[in-house]
Image 1 (cartoon, rainbow, N blue to C red):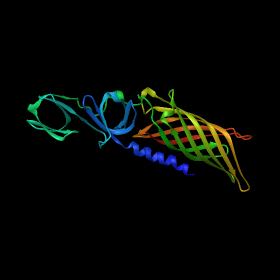
Image 2: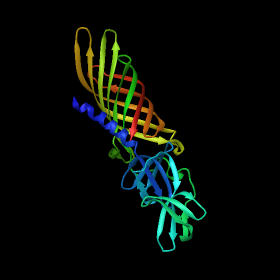
Image 3: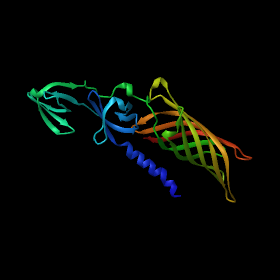
Image 4: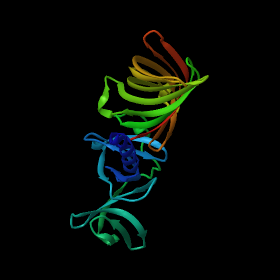
Length: 288
């Protein structure tokens, strides 16, 4: 039974991880502090003002997870001095004859203007370039979440919920593979049915005009169901193969949270008494 705590611990860890701030600095000196979504050897993904940006590391001069803040943008200015040395920092104050810079190496530094040969500073931009927006990314994100389900059909209205996991390393040829485990309960007259369903599934997604809001998905899963029947006089338990299909919309994203709203149907090939149910499902997951 202790293994049941593993997904809960994993979910808490994922949420905590997603709250890390990160500073990214482009080669032109433009800098942003946003929320770190994920990072690998090729790209860094940040959420900045509720938008997801995927940026190749080769386009950045610095990635710093020690910085604090949220949704900040500013510029680094690089000064070349008469002795050939260079100083890079954020201009905190400008006077008639000097700059006060905030630098990583020296802290606050006063730089006399007559020592400067030239300076280089990027144009101000409140957000990273739009070309980095959305899902134009190398690699994937892991998604773990919870579901709530309401179904109708035989043996009666069924309600319940479950857990799903979509590991990043199981995205193959554009198809995301995942696992779903769920518990459903249905009442009928003086009897009760409970279902514990386990599925491996394929997740497909498509966007209209590459717009993250118009993001639609479908899941196709196969697995097995453990069904228990209880009445006043008897209790019966059995297992059977089952499968499901789900169609829905996943255009609601807030920071690392992903919401899915869908319709689904499931069927089980129980020996002598096959059944099908259909209805709706709401799920909320966290990506990292």
